[in-house]
Length: 400
Image (cartoon, rainbow, N blue to C red; front, side, top):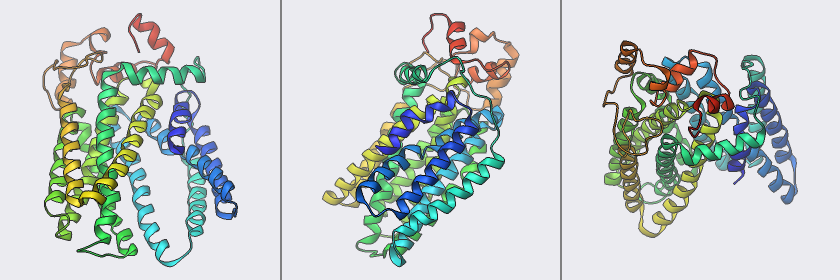
């Protein structure tokens, strides 16, 4: 609830305010509030501070659209994959440290480490983060929230990506929370420390993210999503077959799920960011809210199924979710116009270089290509990026 509040109310500000100042403000607030968590002895104060820390801990969701804005189009997926790798590294590192701290020392050490880490991040951001101009200066905060809601119900590509993200993050959340139960029980009976250190296996998979991003830069995002979903299903099949029998199956599935989960996330984010240059923070907020909902759903449902039916039933449930993701992707082709909800059009070309060459050969008008998945970005980046209201005026009666 805390993080979802920050996603809904703070992360869209990236489309309204200067990102450097917003980032510095959020990191400073988070660090200050964490100091309170480390020293307070009041339960009420602890709960209030925890809620506020969760609200302002949306820094990665400000950085993600900023990275997409700063990167050239041909390297955008690589830039996004680096930011997502950092985010996943933090999550997995937290699992490792939680196991170590629970084994050897007190819980307050977690907050002492968080204070030091955030201080380093604040200093690094101050000296390294560029002062990128603000967008949509003619809009108000209310306009930003209203248009974000419109995007969530009127953009076919965003809705498709959000539903796939929800199901994918449900699988991811279910896997990691039930992995703790699996490794802590028979036949493994690992200690809390060993289970925490097991997150290092996931870190190796996450480290492959930038390499995966380079591949996505060459592919049409739809095909990268298809490859990602297929490989995730294969990795989950390994877990379904032997996850509770042999530790090698757990290691293989963990590596595969981390690598290809990131491939799917980067591909979906890249395609969604092509909808509008001026609205990337809002588009990202909708996408991440669906991810958050999926994680909550996967954690709760996965835990219940594991407790009542065991590890294999949980793995089979995830396999069913991967089937749903494939179905959702196949409902809409790789080159559909922006307003197309279902079907296939524009061919089945898989490589961006082929699509780019075809567009250059035919020299299409802006009105002819703005509906293509990659088209809006190319046209808008060739000119001054429009504000949200300017984009609406240019489209006439077309809905955002």
